[in-house]
Image (cartoon, rainbow, N blue to C red; front, side, top):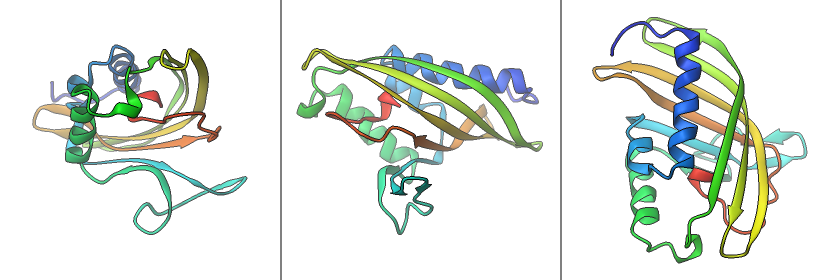
Length: 166
């Protein structure tokens, strides 16, 4: 599937990503990313200004390549992340998907999201929300995520924050 990407298909791609996270199908989820993909959740400098450079400023999460995502998925799947066990249950909602820029081989999207997280270990629930910025890129296999920036608007983290929760 290496055809042109319509805005509707791009939005569906984001919905599929959320679906895979909610079903904890992490190997399929990480396959949505290019080998050089960047996954970034900036921290906040102040009440209204997130950090701007993951290389020089604090981040909540920064994965500079797909390999870093693969490593995290392995830790989640291997039960070696004691702080994350048992895995929380999530329900993501992605909305307001807009195309910011589109070319023949890339499409930049912005969207809003919420994620309801239930932690069975603590019998607690929390709602995270914010905005996504995705860059989809055409590759030999079709379209993949080359960059994902997650701005977490409510960055009070009651216990653990992990890739699949946001």
